[in-house]
Amino acid sequence: MVLVMPRFLLKNLPFQTTKEAYTSYVEWGKYMNEMFQIKKAKVMAGEEGDDQDVMIALVKGAGISAQPSDETGKEAPQQSLTDDEIIGNTFVILLAGHETTANSIHFSLVYLALNIASQRHLQSDLDEIFQGRPASQWDYDQDIPKLFGSMAGAVLNEELRLIAPVVGIPKSTAKNSPQPLNVGGKKCTVPGGIYIAFITPAVHRNPNQWPAGPPADPNKPAHPLSNLDNDLEEFKPERWLLDTDAKKTASMPVQDADTEASQLGVNTAADTSAALYRPPKGAYIPFSEGYRSCLGRRFAQVEILAFLALVFSQYSVELAVDEYATDEEVEAMDEKGRRRVWGMAKEKVERQMRNDMASVITLQLRKGSIGLRFVRRGRERFNWN
Image: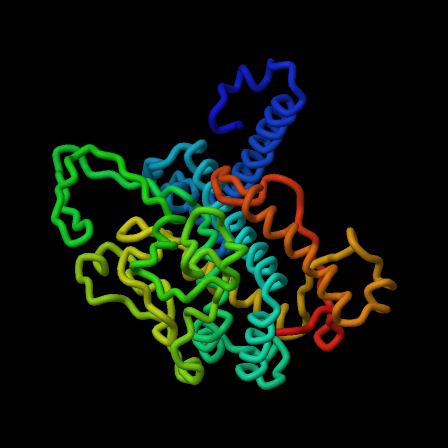
């Protein structure tokens, strides 16, 4: 709302939602400006600050530095970004780096609660990788490549295939600079100054580019219209697994031999581990594609992998069935009764995932909520393959 509506309308329209949006916008602006002034003052006072602080990095990168002494007489370097641009960039980085990752973690939990066999496979791989070591003894260089090439990486990749953060990725050709394009083996030319949107849900569900099997239940397709004869609408991380032992020697993707990209500081390494299925170029674009792909993709991947490893090495996640039975009633049920209430919860969640999703900057659940429960491993109430 704040992005598309003029500020004077937000302020003066007689609706509660617009008034709340305007108040949030004003309060956020005051908070960000106050934080910026504190960071700027520290830099101008000659304090180094935290190298991991995004706003400190932007302040320094904009040319703001300690005031020159009167003795040297040197002029302060010209500020390359305005104060508003620094604040705006900080907001975009925080939004892109946190909301997208949070959404991916949320939907990974939901999919794993819906697919118990895949969750157990994930936990088995985690047990094999960590061998009972506590999190304090985990090592980035030793463990992250194995996670990336295991069921944890497959879960991450499959969730991003089904629910990429951005539905339409904007691209454009430079003015007076037409670009060649290969479509289905046919060479085309895109004129200069043209905007194109990559529609990620369609790209990620193209049966010509993805390994697919028959649907789990032809009578109850995951989508009423799309891919009725295959399982590409379904969460199936196993489609990424090629060799169950490959994770033991897996390594992180390396930079492609692209001299121009290296000179520009662009990371052209693959989005997926070599131990897993590698989609054809352009078929998997959750982080976009090319020189303007997501700068923080590897950070996001490591963050999500670490979360999955930390949680599922100790816990299981289950669908909440409170709407259909109390805890005491579930405890008293046999497996048939538990399958019945779990099935009702499953149908509701699948309906929400199908009908209540919308994109507001990022793709997310826009209506209602999905109930989940974390339980210690070994205490699961719904445990079947």
